Length: 271
Image (cartoon, rainbow, N blue to C red):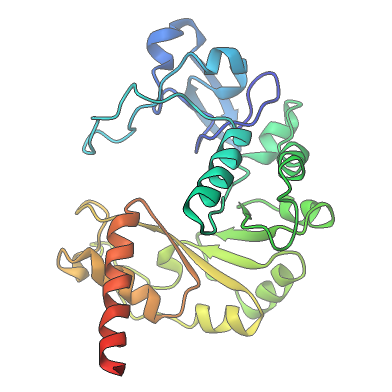
């Protein structure tokens, strides 16, 4: 997301009223705008300067999740996220990376705040605008095609709504390194959330030379399919067994435990 003065910040949406205390601190900034054809009412990042954003504090968006951390952290800039990842990587002696999404890029371009060149400039500044950098850039829109000549960082085309055919996968391969499908594009679900049989999208994407990173695994009953019978680890293992190359989750600790425990079992079996 971008601020009014053109600084990239780390928010999932430009509507920041749900994830910060903007409503309490700036009650007069509530606006209604049309973004990507959808009317949105709230507190929008592009109506705030960075200095104003830095007075805000983050909060949990969903009511049924813990709010114990509300009000404790400020909204970071994209530069600060890169700096944190690089510093912690050095301190811990292992590779850490970032996975930014250009959200609503057409809209931001239409209001004179294009995201792409600022994102690439930040990567360049920190030495991460390269093929070997631990950086993935994702987008639902077609702007990845425009970014390809400007960066060697890995690009992931996000997908939702329909399963791509082989011709579309070949087209994506011409400018991107992988696809980021919604989980339901790999395993369909009925209206009641019960799962059908997995399809061959992973196999076909790999055949086209594309990575597959699925989104988003969440462990709460409101999100977890009843087919897993409350066992969130089973979902992680199913997508691992389908051969995906990466998994987005709101519960990384559970994902690590599920997949690491399985590796431990395999290791013991080979001893």
